[in-house]
Image (cartoon, rainbow, N blue to C red; front, side, top):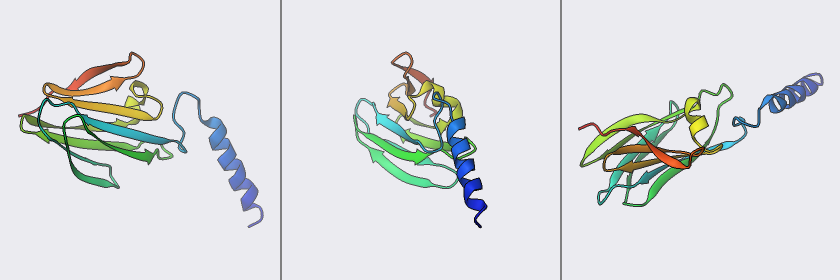
Length: 135
């Protein structure tokens, strides 16, 4: 048992040192925001991962639903959402490692509008349409 402690400490130190400044480490918390930018309708937001169902939430106009989580060790964390309102619905990946470059280091901001779903691209400081509503 005494030899396990130094090995474990070395492993944790090695993991910390291997994390780059650009990417998020497994110790960081991510936050995903889903903002209701619809003109006058309530937005239903239902998000989940493989392990966690965050439930269904009715979000009023100009309000948001958000949650925080830690990335898994394998950098394969995935949260997907289904957004719906009177004008349509859409299911999409709200967080996965591939979109981290488009988000802030610890923040992904999605905005639902009458014509579709937009992601805030931090590098350009602008919302870009990623999805259109399905009927």
